[in-house]
Length: 101
Image: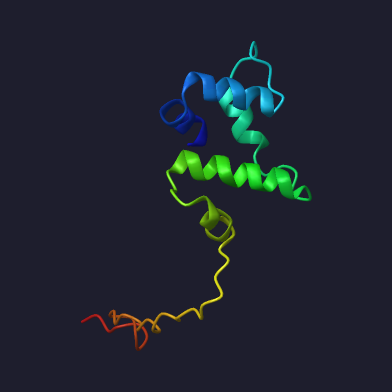
């Protein structure tokens, strides 16, 4: 999905800059796929994580860069509401095997 979005959301110049930034040869094949595969690979490097989050946010169309990390990692300090428990639907097998006849 991200590889396809690169064609739509980035200009040719932006893609070329991205390839050189992520150490992908401009002569190689499937460059967009190579970028997509390199995202989130260095989780111990905070700068790499920020760049990955920024690129993904740009490709999926998020507008506010400050909110990107919170949304990517699901960071929310507001209390979460639990959904109400689901009732089991009643089907003919509720009380065992029905009698036939």
